[in-house]
Length: 107
Image: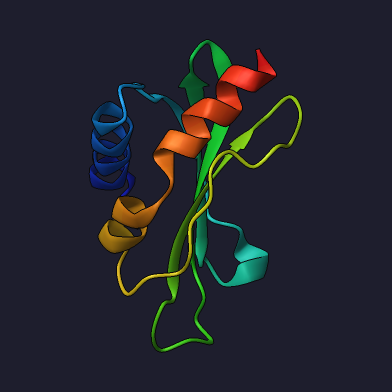
């Protein structure tokens, strides 16, 4: 899974809502227990440690690609999204404005 282009799309989504950027930290290898269907990128957003997860649900033929954003300190999901047909679509449809609002509430 190529992470760099996906992070770029995430930052474009954040910028469109007046937030960001997500400052990428280390890439965490895909979880081998899940047949390499998930990749995690840690980093910072608004001064907080966050994780950005990209997941492929291999059991689905449609809406298999999803993205999620979590605050590392609390485990809180930031924003929300549904599975889409590509990662680009999942990132585009993600509720980045809600993620930024959620992050502000955490302090």
